[in-house]
Image (cartoon, rainbow, N blue to C red; front, side):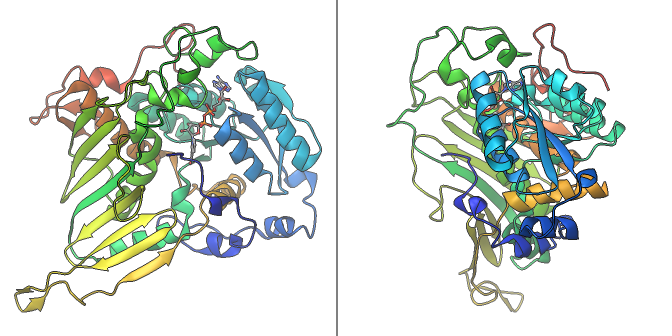
Length: 463
Ligand SMILES: NC(=O)c1ccc[n+]([C@@H]2O[C@H](COP(=O)([O-])OP(=O)(O)OC[C@H]3O[C@@H](n4cnc5c(N)ncnc54)[C@H](O)[C@@H]3O)[C@@H](O)[C@H]2O)c1
């Protein structure tokens, strides 16, 4: 399943006002500044002094999308793009040329882009193994950052990124755009209101079937394309021969660069559970799974069941790449199971199913007809998320997907991978951010997987 934004995200301005003005309880999604509304409507050009100058680092699928959406705002202009593949630099330059008639400078080394004093903001959409280095250096260079999820390749990097943002007083928006969706905000409010009763179980899931189509296969290693600086693409990751199905886009299926479906997709889904349940640190995580059926060169699992215990409830993430049988007619989603009803949620909307049990408990009829069935359609997510970022760049307020809480969501996803790779249940000491046994004693090798080795000369910048 593609993680590309939904069709709704590509729609024009029709849903703009409603989507943005819906104040979530998650964080106040501020209304669009008057000058941006005028610009969006094409009424009045923004004076050059009020423009925000952006640079893009990582010109693949998501980076170009983030940049194109940013340039819908007349207040934003693009001066530079950076990629280690010159084909992708040219694609991003062509996007800007098409929408603005200007060609941003192209760079292969992100440090040269960060050296430019005229750049206020960077969008970071590299593979995950580059997020921490680029983001921390961007903060140190005084740039605000729109950072793609998951925030870091691992938990140690995530904490360092939070520190960098705080110490450098940078505005950082993480690319978990579901937080800006009005219907996600409404569903979170409903869960928090207690409507569903006591929620003892939540579930997030992605189901698909790569078995028959097998998009990865077993291609042989080869020389990298001439346009790609493969050594720089690898950067801090271990040296190994080039393989097209480990590089662009496919990197997410290898632990050297990504974190499989749990870090790639569940980070969006599990984030909504954390927000709705106001639970940010699991007590423990156990995971089962592996590459059971699909014979290709992927490293990350085709099957994963991750079971999190939080205070008062259990959260399960299920991933199947071998069978696309849906749950609640959905191939991905979030489910809150309450004693009075069930709420099912995805990017296209939510549904509430009243509990069907009609037993009397202490004179109270539990279930049937106690709450009403309800259905709501989806709402824009990515566009209001982009707007929220640029509003915060101006106002210096904290964006809706702040780095601190997204570190916690990302850490939970990494913990499932750690439990799977170690083969035992991991307890989480959220204060010290270490894995322990049930008695609170630090455990190895789980803690080895909290960080990683860096291939010289690359290292995590000090903050
Ligand atoms: N928010 C969402 O819904 C969403 C959707 C898809 C992807 N993403 C995230 O966006 C990021 C990019 O994913 P993608 O699917 O676009 O991957 P991709 O492989 O298509 O693009 C990554 C780009 O980064 C470039 N790159 C690699 N190292 C670089 C470096 N050191 N400097 C500059 N550029 C470098 C690559 O050459 C490539 O062009 C990931 O973190 C992913 O998780 C988010």
